[in-house]
Image 1 (cartoon, one colour):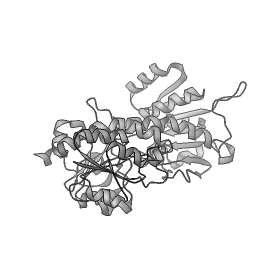
Image 2 (tube, helix red, strand yellow; image 1 turned 180 degrees about the vertical axis):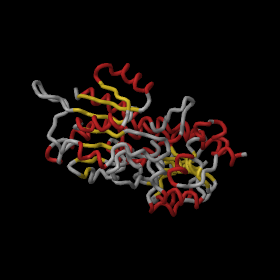
Image 3 (cartoon, one colour; image 1 turned 120 degrees about the horizontal axis):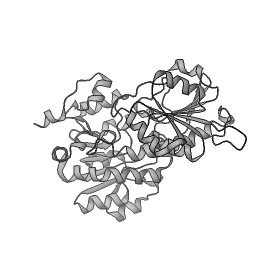
Length: 371
């Protein structure tokens, strides 16, 4: 198979879909790899690194898309890339289609076989290709939240870890999945007070076993959310419905309850956000203030640490990419049911139930199409 990777176009997105080591693996499996020039530069990989690994470096993304049977990326394609798609081409990347009806329609119209990292599952139902970025985003959320609590950015002027004789800041984490857990680890590490809410009692018990008295766990109800928001200096929104839009657990009516200058970091913004007042921001302009509350809603948080993020991501995606390249999509999804869950669009149809529900599209089961 011919594999291609291109430079990411999202604002301050420096990650890359393939490392030179990944290229070596694809070459070892008998595949051909094309890389757009400077695609890996932001993550610390030069064109020479790719050439030495066996890739062919091309000048433009159009050339790479035209040659490739499978495109391996990091983020969803930008509108200027839509014309590059071709019938039957595999697109292997984060897609986050639920809040992006335009991209979904284009993928369906063009007949792209779109495989989303964020909905691939392992044998026990976990999300192995989303996990590393959730870990990074969780840790970054505390780092960024602490910065924007500084008065110069409109924050309350709170040092989350406090000092002797001064109360420590309070962090409220909504959602106890991977991102929420790693946010809690970072929050405990700076000695902040931490409240973590989730709807799964088993998950709460597990988190209490991990963190002990360092974290207060609460069952996520409207009453507990409201009470926690009133006390919070920093709120981390880390709710996830795989493939679907995130429920708006922090609504506009809640903002007046919060302390002026408190910060919300909405990690879930890729899937629409779990705060009703959130909208996507960029690393160039990461925050906005609404009703006195600082909102940080960058849609590609791990892009701020691209070397770490690229290696962590490709450690998880490589095995699936090789499975697709070695066998073709149709055989690969028969060999791995978890990879089949990653197929969001196939043969002009939406094949992910949560995406279809979120966008009001007809859902067609991939298994029915493969019969």
